[in-house]
Amino acid sequence: MNERIDTNDKHQTLPGTKHWLFQVIPPLLILGILFATNNGSALVFLAGFFILPVLFSIISIIAKLIFFKKRKYFLIRPLLTIIVFAFIMGLALWTYDIALKQAVSAAELIHKECNERSVCPENPADWNVEGTRISRNDFGVWFKYIAAYQYNPAGFDIRVYKGPDIGDNIIGGIGSAIKVVPYVE
Image 1 (cartoon, rainbow, N blue to C red):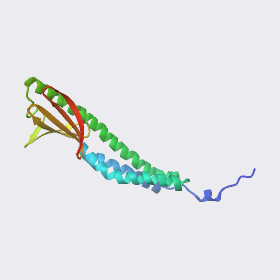
Image 2: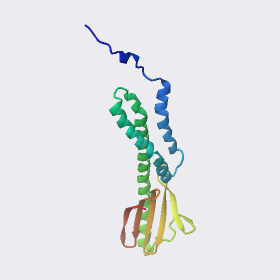
Image 3: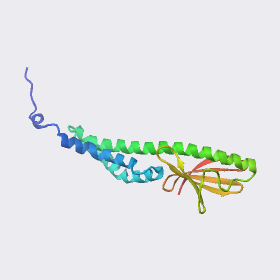
């Protein structure tokens, strides 16, 4: 039985601990933005800074799969970067959906008051008045999202901010149904 041993395989060794730490720690440091803020809109903004590393990771994975077929363990850092980014964005979207549902519930209470009194409240209960701005910043779980209330005697508009210049408008009023309309500025 003659088995041929490839001499190239004898000289290749698996990388050491330092290599694995260099592959795993940088992507895990991205998780630090989860503790940088409790504002969901700010989280989406901060996560935007990691789009470039994610794009670089995608390109890196494609290049490594094409050119470095034997060393698949070099795919750990780019894959982990993409997974961590997707986790953060998924968490932000999940908490925003909860915040939007809470804001719709608050809008239903205001809508009920509008129809009972035939005029919408100028300053709804549980909303903060700061000059001309009426808002709440307690919608959501873990990450809180800001909602702004705009008054009109016959109706109202609640804008829930998902991120910078993006979110949903909750529109309601006397004799009309509540509508949730996405907006992008």
